[in-house]
Length: 545
Image (cartoon, rainbow, N blue to C red; front, side, top):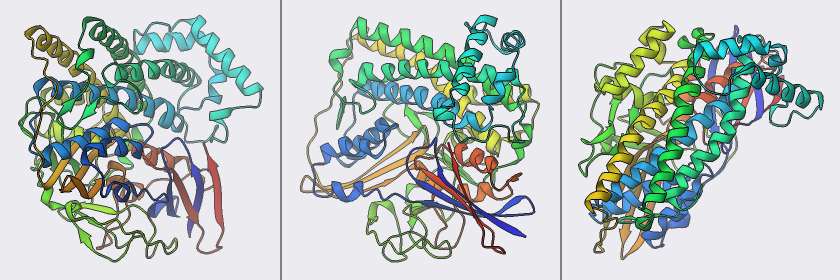
């Protein structure tokens, strides 16, 4: 007998998302992913000055704002055939790196960890044993008995107050939680530590971005933060980077390894088949060859065969989306013609379009980036992945999973944190050489431009068509559209729909397992998970925080 469940809303994500799943014999049999928020920024941009587009597109998100700003100036740079100076390229990379160092740890501790960590169970922990556990997995400071006693007392007072706030309505005590009390207490402390580190990561972003979250220092042709290239600003940047990198090396990575050790079975749950990465962090003006994280596509989990990306093979489908017609268009010719009908998973059920590469649904994001890097022979990625697999004593096939996706995000963070040190030293060298040009002038011309980026959540592309110095058309294909989009015209499931198939559900009224896989994609839309019993017509509605 199959069941359907409704979880509405799912929080700890950005935006609005509805997921409906059908469960049979304790496992997800079918799934539908629905974006329930119409964006429409593309329509707002038509007729505007292309140089202003990045200021508008940043508002697509309240967290990853910079990434849309960068994708926008890159696509206009491309349309106008602009080669930006070395210093501008480096500063853009450094600000993108700061976005990674902010977003990934925040996702784990604030948005995802509570699917694996039972905070209430931490009240049963022995602070002494917790300190011993922390000492066994890392050398992070502030991990003594007194520190853990203080956190336990704070949690106890918090729970006793009856005002759990962000921890209310969660599934505490669910049988799928496996961490012992001491591991839960350690993770709870590190959640509080992350809240302080998040502020520093935002400050890191603002040093050359002027502010956070909506930075002000991008411009078509380069950046506008040349006046910030002085000893005080660079020293402040290096100081914060050192602190954040220490947190990643001594807290984030050890926590991922410690938690993953209790959930190895999730190395066989939540996987997808195809992966796409645009690549990021150009080291010269030659792209994609110079990208620090390489561009590539993998089909059928064949890591040994990383293919080149042909942007001409990217298409968007609207057969199951609330837009006019059933057409399939390349983003450069894309249309935004909303037409809401009703929520009907057998017909149209999402505001998201369904992007496909060469006709295939592709997962994008940290796991796709890491697999492409690993398969391309990226030395740092290969060494780190091999080390993690060896430490956890799991096979490489475990990468294709919810566990693999979560670990990949942490590994991505370490790779970028390490590289940020080198990029900062390169910045200092350029300053010493007097190579501080940050802007390249240009001439207007009509034409099409494309900006491909690999941002924390995954492959992000902006396309602009310029006519008479105005935007004739603008299209954005964002990571969550790739990952959370609905079925396409050929009824091929989107990545998160595919990933949910086979997920075990212990209690349909508390579908913690669904949240684990959905959250592992770090959706930039708010979610609702729906499960309906087709025999009794019972619909379980569950609020989750």
